[in-house]
Image (cartoon, rainbow, N blue to C red; front, side):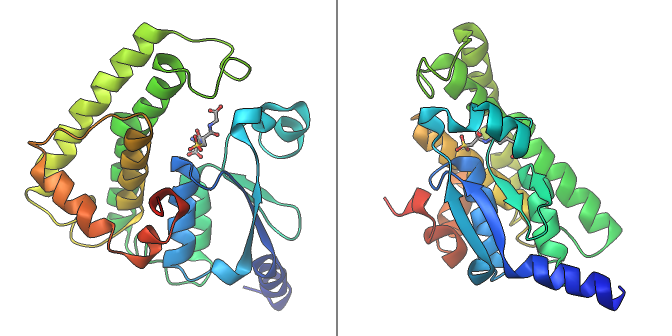
Length: 228
Ligand SMILES: N[C@@H](CCC(=O)N[C@@H](CS(=O)(=O)O)C(=O)NCC(=O)O)C(=O)O
């Protein structure tokens, strides 16, 4: 990296802003990654109130994130990065020594796959249930709801819980034998499950034991979603 590029990178590192909803499942994913990378003193959080629909305001959509979701990372030079996986990848590789997204092609591919699978089969499915099968963020934000679709996604998420339980019967973490971004994504799913009161089936003992282990990590237990 050239000296100029390094300085830009350094200046970006000095003041990063996360547009955030502190107890939200997706923001919690990035909060955990920030804590795992010890970047807490490099980031300021700016609350965006989902229940007031601030993330759906025209100025937020236009200036921060076309998708109207949180979290969003804003760098000192105004660069915006949305999507938890992308934000985690950026933060993880900033110091040149990734610890959450993989250090080899095989690790990177496996972690990305398992994190995406955790989104598809659990986290995003529970999010859809929240928005369509419950009052969600309230009638001023949930302008269209399809309860049947929400309930189907809820059932999909429970199947996903059984999948991850079987996986954890034969390995210690979601992407293998090391903690990674994939574990953080499943943690996000279980945070959302608690919000919508969707219990993990009691027979999913390996998943429940893994979650108890995850909650002993300082990066996890220190988050507002876990501070009760
Ligand atoms: N694919 C996006 C999804 C982000 C997302 O859905 N974030 C939630 C925040 S939270 O529910 O986890 O707190 C949101 O903005 N929801 C608002 C909405 O969907 O209207 C990502 O990975 O960042």
